[in-house]
Length: 125
Image (cartoon, rainbow, N blue to C red; front, side):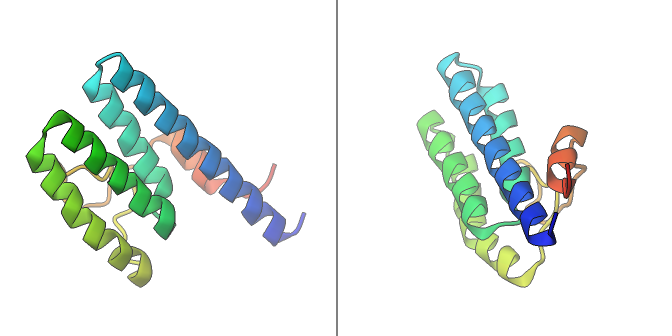
């Protein structure tokens, strides 16, 4: 298998995992489980953060959820992150593993859960 094909497979696996996390966000929100919805938004952010488009989308979804909850502090934090995310992607200075919430420093790297690490590190099957 060529490296290009392996990279594409990894990209598709990450995209599928992000979509799955967003489905779990919706299900948790439908059930009124706000902490679980935030948990899955954070996992989606971890998966998305190394690619500009998905990274910005993850913060946009967090902002929308914060507004839905009328959590203005979180909303303000997400607005800041919507500005910072492109800069981090363009400069390569990203706090890998960071969950993206305003309750944690926008600059602090965090441990990546092992199941997400396996998806992100996947290069061959």
